[in-house]
Image (cartoon, rainbow, N blue to C red; front, side, top):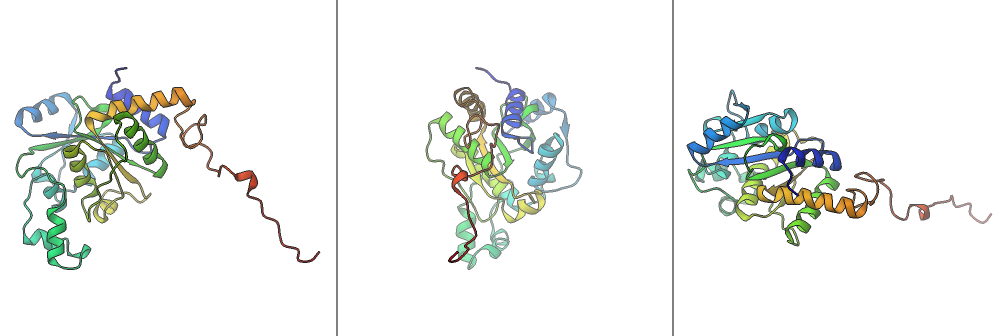
Length: 262
């Protein structure tokens, strides 16, 4: 089976009842790849510097493909994750609210996933269905059970188990994508304090990030499971996702008022 990215997005949106478009993130390391990206996509440019999470809002909520560059990124965490800024004492001080002391802030900062300094030229951030180049990662904002289904299908498709999450004290969206890209491993993690606010995740969305080279095989596994079980739902096979939200033993969960000695 050979799916297009547009077909994969439609299947994911329909079967998992996704609220947001999956985001195709494309790391662009040279001028030629930037020009190719611009030629193949209808590109939107940030008017003013903003956060990476806000670039993603445009992609997942408005289906716009954003071309982001270092001069248009206002978030220090994002700059560090993408190799657009080194970690110095001033950067470490911005992380002090998470930790016990400066030394711990330094240790935690240096252990976060980062692209090599100065190598990345630009970022393509758009809906998966509009991707015309192989994405580096695919980022989902979804609910608990959607994230579970995505994780299960990724593990089955890649034969990797268990899925190890990489959660940092900040940089959930930016660093989370970098982790999946560098390690070729899916990631599932909550919003960090910055992405919760600027990323508009008031619904409590969970981040699921899948390496770009794994996304089509993950969707193909979803379709295989649907053929075998009768639906895409793991919780209640045969029902549309997410299935009936009831306990398996629901008929047994009956309570009667205590009438004493009557």
